[in-house]
Figure (cartoon, rainbow, N blue to C red):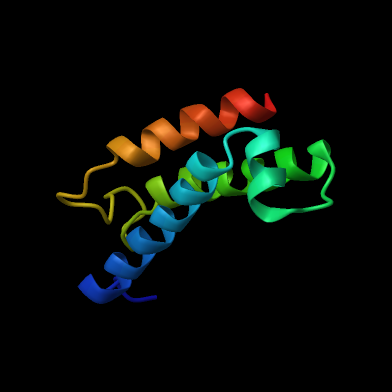
Length: 92
């Protein structure tokens, strides 16, 4: 296994941003159904929020090959942390 390159790390962080957007945009079931015209049930919506929240937690925990050092350097996790808090409040 090799260390992640700067480009790979940037792509991972970008993917985290996608999950932040999903959680923030669809932070209420009514906003989600209005925006998407979805027929998803509230339980399905909560499951989607939970998947995105867990995705963010996994990304935050990424480590280098040594298994202890974070891959993250100067990235700001303010928006990610807020989205995790929002997401958990929805499904817990």
